[in-house]
Length: 394
Image (cartoon, rainbow, N blue to C red; front, top):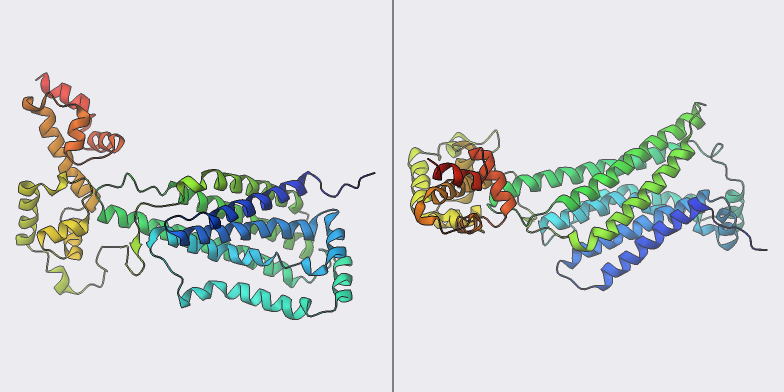
């Protein structure tokens, strides 16, 4: 007769760990551009593999006993992964949105909870004799375990949520940056990164709720069904990891990032000196308007704020301030407004009737039909094709 070691829930945990390890090894062995991004993602996946293994060893119906026989040192070692998830996800996010991102000394602050937890386990568990470790694990009961550890678990989940929120803030800053500095953002795809961060952030909010319910049940005697909620979290994590692996290789990059030390917010601070604000003069506004109308730099598809500033011999920060304050828009809207006006002129020009809408779209600097149609309809109130028909019937 064969003994049943794993139930269905255990198999899901094992499959989650297996997928994470396999994909991490794939990322580490494939040489690609921006290799540091793959390293952060690979270690994030390895950390994700450690969590289900820790759950399996700590709470698996049969495997816990087998783990005790193999080695009591298996306990808690995989639990280090919980404390590494937040930092690794944050570093991966930053490696996508910053050019040539490298860890700096101040980043060690995110590892302090991990270091504290590791030190605690080394002193109070791993320094014990093997017999003492076996005794602890054989007599372990969640309901009579030190209550302080339940609060440590709650802090751990809140810590992971906090770093997930920081990731969202970084993404928001990057989104503002690209609209402030680029006229063509069709190749800049943040969808993948947003799904990754929001997905795991939602799972960690759920984990906070589970940790809170454990405290309510054990410390205050309030009846809760935290076991079922924990299982839901495990299955959701398996789904998220599957999505991560399926879409990861094709979407794990961003078009262009900020310099690591660059401030993404291009608008002047509220306490900016009055001298800086006075630089926005009528002469500068007239210079910009005339240059845009005569030289038509917006016809260049890959035009950026920096390139336009060089052409006009105006500091990029000052040019951005003028666009934001006087024209009341970002660089993206500013440039594409001129492109839409140029497209309107060409669509209504009988001498351009031999050109298709797609030809005109490319001529005025757009690279995406969807973006062209969306912006045109937003400003004009109809699609380019509808506009051409309407002006030709007049």
